[in-house]
Image (tube, rainbow, N blue to C red; front, side):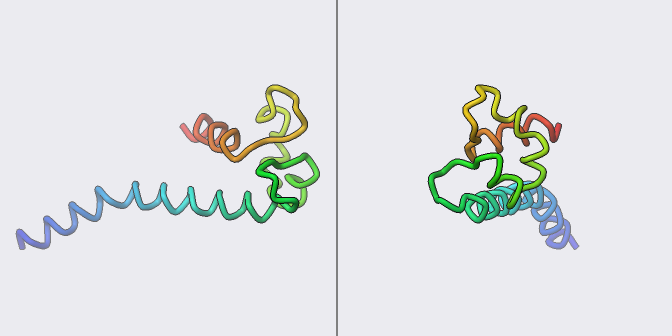
Length: 83
């Protein structure tokens, strides 16, 4: 029984880290698929075609109004709005 409790506790501790890692991988995969010219940036059109939620918040994410967003900017925006 003690061993079972240790295993369950370990799984509960590891679950949030695993979920975050999985979400990170999914975000990276979706960003790469949407980045059709593989320049590491999403234009508004690329976001509309491949990442509609990013497109919905494009102006907020592209705070410098450069006409594109990077994966890092998308990650930062997501982190700020998941709290």
